[in-house]
Amino acid sequence: MQPLHRDLYRAFVDQGLDTWLARLPEQLARGLDRKRYGDLPAWEKAVAKLPPLPEDRRVVLDADTVTVEADLDASRRRQGENLLRALAPWRKGPYRLGGVHIDTEWRSDWKWQRVAPHLAPLSGRRVLDVGGGNGYHAWRMAGAGASFVLVIDPSPRFYWQFQAVRHFVGDADGGAVHFLPVGIEDVPEDLAFFDTVFSMGVLYHRPSPLEHLAQLRAALRPGGELVLETLVVEGDATTVLLPGDRYAAMPNVYFLPSSAALCTWLERGGFENVRVVDEADTPLDEQRATDWMTFQSLADFLDPDDPTKTREGHPAPRRAVVIANRPA
Ligand SMILES: C[S@@+](CC[C@H](N)C(=O)[O-])C[C@H]1O[C@@H](n2cnc3c(N)ncnc32)[C@H](O)[C@@H]1O
Image (tube, rainbow, N blue to C red; front, side, top):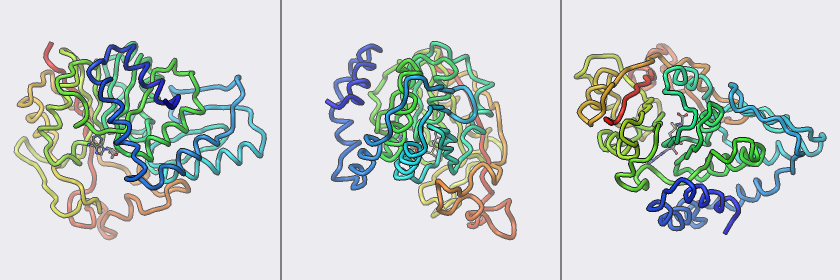
């Protein structure tokens, strides 16, 4: 068994996640299937070749840039940078790893700034981050004191970006953070385990949003907290936009409710204490092309003559953070 997998299995044993543990071999094999994902061997090799790090590194998980300072000579630093670039595009961050600043497409720290002040304190909590990307927010959750953070995301590129960051962080998070390359549909039914479940930037990608909410609820222990961040539109409790073919060039966007409609969905879905804690238009400098993500980004997806609209004529991206509880 690979050492990376060994840590994951050990964490599941320690957490008493027995029913899920039995499914890990199949889930890992499927999520990292080289026949499905041709780039996997190259990503795995890049992470394996990252330069070894000195013991005395400085790890910062509670600042906007997830940072690992380590004294690497110029050639090792260059080697590290080239290998990190082999995992591009880097969408979620920012990171600073061994002297290399990864200026990601998203300022994911801005999202965290909107979310973090409203959370039940994460200290000692067991957290699930559904669709957690490469794990940027998971490191921030560990930095805020969470004792166990599991990222699930079906993207194998994000899995290897996470493992690259893990190489730099080492055990400075106390082994709290883990990544399983699967989707929400792979979480065992009625788990009722996590103290906090995050679903950020995922709901609008789900063809059945009410089913997604039910899956999130089932993963929470009674009394646990859901943190839902998603695209919304302006309107009242009856307003929901189905953008059709594409939204801001994305083909896989299904339902964009108003925040009032979203609250209704949550209440109908068996959540209580539902509250909107933040709602704002997405600024252009929150999602932009950089040296680490050189493809088109938000500015290219908006109407050049009217940036309040996407190029398909829909309202430009606006995001809400809603918090709710599973009844105790
Ligand atoms: C827009 S990104 C959001 C990433 C991060 N949570 C954030 O807020 O910055 C959506 C993520 O959902 C993941 N995803 C896609 N299908 C999923 C599924 N069935 N279950 C969980 N995550 C999924 C994608 O791989 C992607 O990383």
